Image: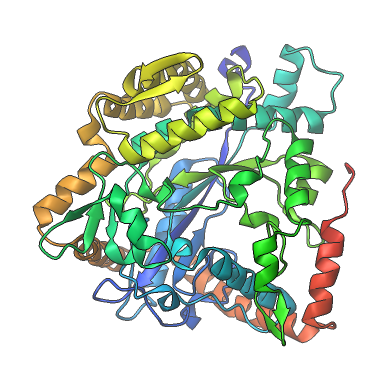
Length: 525
């Protein structure tokens, strides 16, 4: 692309969200509160919790250079370990040893209405799906394409009659559809959860789900699937039979928003029987298909930073798609940050390839085929006999993967022109070798390392966590960031106190007002 060669295109912008359970010395989920020295999980911009009080979530700022995002994330972990006593951060996606549903503490965000809403929402997830599913961790990778690429593409495609906001959103949805067609490739290349602790299946229906797995070791506490890549993304991990009936449409922004808005406004009989507020006890935020939009699980989401009076879909509706969030990435337990720079550069190339490739709308029957492909890859992606359905063709996984890689190489060269290096081409070339060598994938590495360890999976991952803790504790962090994180911790507690002091209405009224606003369509600004 000539504008790239002439330096007329800006850089991609990336941000990372990394989750990780706090565990004790025996590899069991921690029962302790979120450390006070970390700051308020309600208001801290970089250190918070996801579902559980024990499930840390680190959020980096947005950077143009992958190395900068990784550096910031590394200092967040260094800061954490300077303030953690006798606990470790679990480096794997599938959770540590659990002792039943109640052993997973729901995150507490204080007494404010917004903090109570976050807590009740998580109580609702518990009564709907159980807490065990919510203890899974991963990497969320946020990417926005250069702003100057949109008018260029719009002109090249002869679509100047469309509004810039509408065009940008349409093209982001083109990217999302191609991502959904081909995200199995990321699951194969980066999946790192072929095994889990038997306690993960201690919830409802756990015994029935064991028939997909084999026992490992003398203690039989470890279960695994020989060819699996990412059990986290299988029906053993995130699953929701009610949501599967939604048929969320990624063909247009209006359809996507409309389907989600319908879901947060439509009661579901089973959820109605649970009850919402029962004798003063809030069991869930509503009895609808989704309590709020964030309850919808997807391997990718269109995003827009929302204002204080907006829901996520209202922000999209008003100002269009701003960036996309990739949500299908396992933590790589062998990487101290769970992700590294070559993986980030591969993801950048893959996402831009998704944008620049032809992307017809996805009919329902294709949607079912795509689900089947993803299911096959997460359950048996390293099986040499595995074939995928690609349009009307049946193809070996590696053959289809190399077709995608061939297109990505051209995009990688374009990104390297923009960045002034050769790192994207190098990343694509290096990681593509995993297609011909399944044993080099993180999932295969995990099973080999587990065999060499000789013990149970949870003990092996605990040893990894302790080794990484020693590394983070022994390496220096940026002095200015150390001071910043300490200041943010103090400031965030004060901010939470101020929010709690400013509430003027009851929680019931607060929730009623929220859902009344959430049902309102938002016109473009």
